[in-house]
Image (cartoon, rainbow, N blue to C red):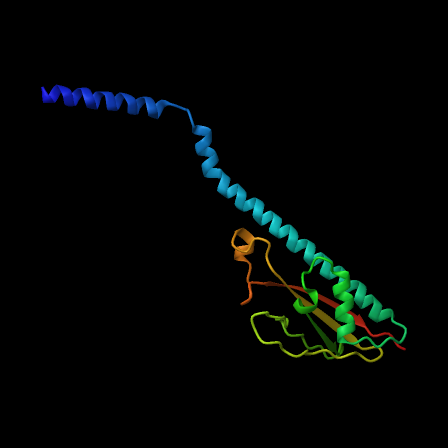
Length: 186
């Protein structure tokens, strides 16, 4: 008696289990649940990459226009703060540009070449303020290299590209722009 009751119960269970395994209801939901997180990760990384590209191209454009002003300036002796203000005014998508932008201007002798430091000097909001380094206005006909380092906060700092980009102690990453020019004769 117990055996037949057990067989009836297990028979019903196996019948329902086989029906469940053959059923295709909810298969789209399963595929969605598996692929949606990956697609969301790609989408958020794409938005992050788009913002990085936009900010970097705006920094490059601002550097080019400002270096052109310096090169073609008619005797204007622009100093660090003037140049930084011009770059910040032209680079529209850099938040808090005045505090997050660091400039270096390095005089280079083209006949006795010495590389500039490979790692740019950048700001770090988590550290104490450092003084301006390597900013020398060039004389006539001198080759100058100007390097700007802007610190940017990721749009999605905990997801995808925003999570994996190298950041400083304040959670910002560096965008670097370099421009070279020859100081025109006055």
